[in-house]
Image (cartoon, rainbow, N blue to C red; front, side, top):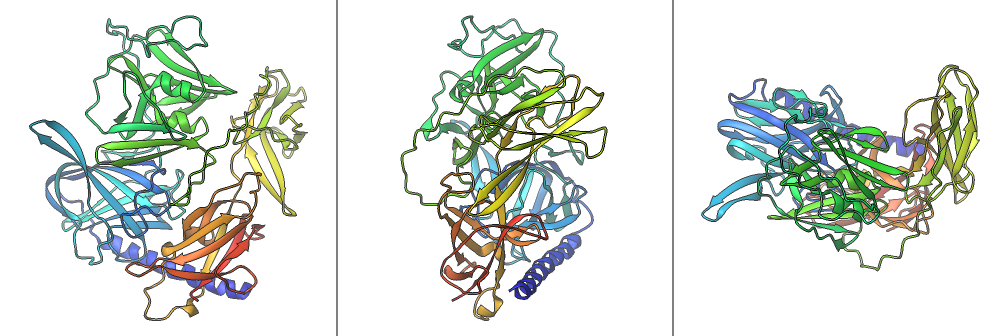
Length: 606
């Protein structure tokens, strides 16, 4: 089995790399000069929460997309032949993790393009979204289209398992006159006009001459605060341009906003501050210090601090950059919905049809790739998350709690304080039944860095996960500190190898992205939760090809091949034993070569 696996793995990787290298040659042949009057004003990765396109056409297929924004300036009518998105290293060099394109020239996934058009009529100005390429252009000579002026595009790349916030991307736009190429970008680091990938903008200096108006961020004070909220004196921001009507749902229930409504601002949704914070369970507070205004929310050991007009926020005291800052618009305080919700432990998804956008806020443990036709069931009442005692900092003591993603305590976790002065000099502790630990530090002049190892038993196997502290920075022993940990991920990956001997010449060429794997949990997952059915498509993963980000548990797997222009073909699966069947149950093991938790499949046609 091992020799067979290695041969198939080598064949598959060689095939994938051959396609990628072929693409690299094509990309370099696009042209060495930028067309006159053509400029990428901005290119950025907005989110990975939508599911708009599939691997080959503009149809949702169960995998979340990478959602990119492109602002393109064309001084004259210009034909765009091809648009290519490539994953690269930080310097723009191919790392062979993924290619998305508008045609079928070589290996790659569809790059879906939507143009935002401004339409002016007698009744006013509106925005319309036009799908530029509903699927691959099979004829590589067929252009994407002809464009000119100041253009706004949303780009969607079906996630092949490699679209991550830590990954770099380069965009290439081929025209008959040459190719426009962006600088490498990452999430939260857009490429702006001038050819640089910029870091978050520092907080602007507050206005020294605020207007005389004194609008309050909301009309009513929080019931937990006996005194009225102070009225901010904001620098007045203009009202935003007309955008889509936005509906926000929390766990299926629509939120209704009195007065100010949600708006779309530079690709981010801003909503009224108090309504969002209080709906998510925060106690809210408004703070003014001179001309600086801040919206604060606190709950159960979590604090979020947003400064008006600043792209730097704070989560539990740690600086975090923002794409779009909190703003005061027409006297109403608006804050970025996704930032607040995701830092509160929720998952956010965005969809849009015409001029109506829908935002869903769900618990973070909802599967990223749910069954496309789930049977609705009533949500059980959630267990109340325990509220730990508030910790006071003590000199020469480090202490805190370990919790899972739902806020429940995790006992028997090994905590270590690593002395940064002396090599391999650690002090160890263990969490008690309440998830609490306390470590007394020696009275020496040094700093310490905290870490934790959590081990879980599952079906007779031990799985260990290393945790970083929620506030992952060194502490001075003399000052002491509180360092909490949150266990959020327990994932593995699956290597998949096609048995090419089962294919014949009458079938299309096999593409791993056309392989659909359905995983149904068999019993509870490693963390004790019931889990969700997952539907994923194959793609490059670390060390080979397959699927990753699968919560560890026992699953029943089925497979289908969905080649372009062909009816879906059910496939048989073999897991280690060499026997093929329509479905197979499997678990994860530790890999001796990669240290990842893995499983392995071979798939073939019946």
